[in-house]
Every structure is written in structure tokens, then in C-alpha cells.
Length: 306
Image (cartoon, rainbow, N blue to C red; front, side, top):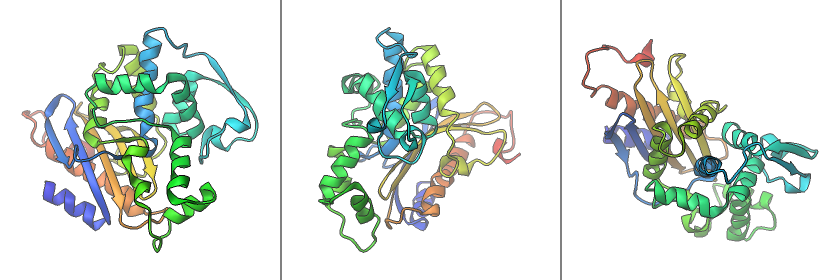
């Protein structure tokens, strides 16, 4: 299976990292360099921020209904949600979490991180055994670092530079030490904790599962499971030529799998459909492998094939 998945990554023109595991049998795993080295995770930083938020709500340290007023000057660059609005808005912290997870709203994500605080996120990661996850900053900090790394005059210039296949990309751009970073193994531990009510209270974990189940993007992990009886919950992350998704796949027979795939494309084009869809393809291959090893005779066909 490792050889097959590495071949799928190569055919898509990406380097890939993968961690897929059975939630009910955590030792049943398919991994590809899952805890090799931390890499920049883009918007995947929002998953541990969400979990830290829920823990603070459980402790009574944050009121999820607290309203936050955001002016146009508070907006963080992004392509969805509050980031693209023109006028001031007032919204609750809980709804900001929903926006940052379902449509990856960057302004919502940075606002929630600011209220949660880096120390709470670090504490969550240490408690859940995620030693290689470090949320140094949200989107605004990552983009500011990108401008510095490329010595660009503006963010637009920096983004254009790293999307140019003929340009030399400074080594600092993909340095995990200067931006939010993690490994598939760490993200899989967090997802397992959320799906087994260990990341926060049962109520908090139920909220997180519900929010992740409402993610609108279907071009990565979900593309491998185009079936009405398969539920895919997830969060995408993108940074330059890196495309990731961390999620959970629930089959019709009750089988449930954490699926975390990171990729780094050989080309820097902003649109690379094959690099997106390979995330769903390799996750499906790994899950089919694990599903076939279950010690049960209650089914005789891949439930997602119906």
C-alpha cells in the first residue's frame, strides 16, 4: 500500500505525507512519513485553535456568545467570509469559529486566535501529545512573514513570486520554524481526540464535529468519497505550493477513519486540480485497505460503492 500511495503522489506531481487510521482501532494505520518533519500548514492552524476555544468555553474562561465588532481595518486578506466584506460587522465568537472552519474565513480565524491566545493553543497541543505542532501566528502573521522572506514590496508581489515556476523561491518561505506548522501524525491525534470526546467536553467535541462536517470544500478529501452514504468532515490548509486536508471519513457501516494528507507540489501554479484530488484518492486507497482488514463478516462490499 505504501508503494501504491507513493506512486499516486508521484503521478500527481507532489511530495506527500499521509496518516490514515481507524478511530475505533487506532493501531490500524496507513502512514507515509507521517511524523517525518513539521511543514507549514496554512489554515489547518484553525483546528487546534478551535479545540483550544472549546476548552476555554468548558472552563468558563470564554463566553461563546460574546460579540466582537470588526471594522474594515481589522480584516485579514482572504477570499471568503468577513475578509471580503466592505462594512463593519458584529458577530459572536462561536459564529467566528464556525466561519473559520466551514469556509476558512481568515479574519474569523485570526480574531478567534487573538481571543484564545497562543498559550492556550500550545497547552492543548502538549496535553494531546502533539509535540511537532506550533501555532506561531495566524494568517496575518504568516503572510507578513512571506513578504519578509521574499523581500517583496507587497503581499501581492510576494504571492506572485511564489506562484512563478521560473522564480527561485527563498528557502525561508517553507521554513516551518517561522509559521504555523505540524505533521500528519499530530493532526491525526487531534482529530482522534475530537471524535472520541477527549479534546474537550462531550458538548464541545460534538460542536467541533458538527462544524467540521459543514465544511464547504469538496475538491480535496471529499473528492475521494462521492457517495451520499459517506460523511466527510474536514479542514483544508493551503500555503504556496502546499495543499493539505485533515478530516474524518465515516462510512455507512459505522466505520470511522481519521485521514490527514499533506502535499507539496513540484509546480507553483495556484490551480493544480491533480494536486487537490490526489488527497482524496490516497485517503480512499488507505481507508479501503484498513476497511478490508476488519475482523467482521457483517459486510461483503465496500460500503462507499453503493
